[in-house]
Length: 209
Image (cartoon, rainbow, N blue to C red; front, side, top):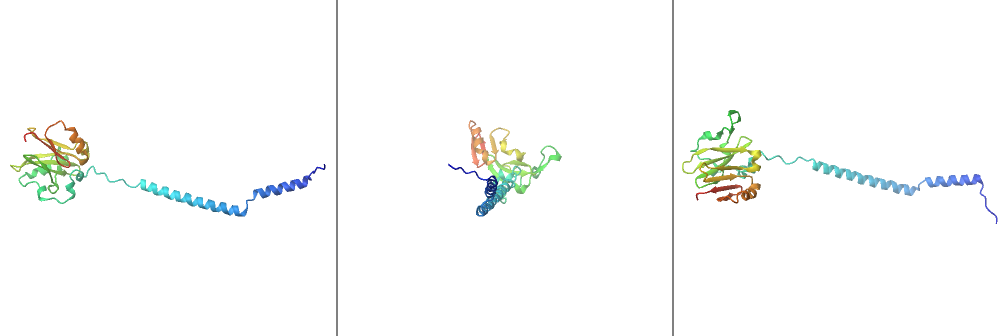
């Protein structure tokens, strides 16, 4: 049987041609691949824009801190003062300049910001912001129309406990708090007789009813 022995020169030329063809992508495939990369680039760009949008949303300003907003405790502060919200004229006006510790730390109560929050058998209870960082309650004797003074606490600490006041004889108590704390605070005094919820965030205790 005769065997073929390709000429070495021809073999080298053929091999070079085949290698050359293998390294040249077909025009139609090149165009298709180019279109594919453009599409992929567009998708990548869309993803980047979407990602940027998410980042912008995530970095948007958070809601303002309301710790110094007394209306979170006394919602009626966001409404005009009513006649029933006003402290009786028989109350000593010096009460509205409340000395917290010393003359430097004085907090004035604005009479136009007092609000009626509740009452006991013998007292009418009002509340009002004092300065821009305190909140006070003012108990007015319903018979005499006078008041012994105001009890005040820091607005920023109000979430922790609210403001709980007890009369000197211990017969009457009232407790102003943030609305979200009512359930927890009612539970904490379930073993103490006399507590009732008089308003959404105001508890009263009367022992001599």
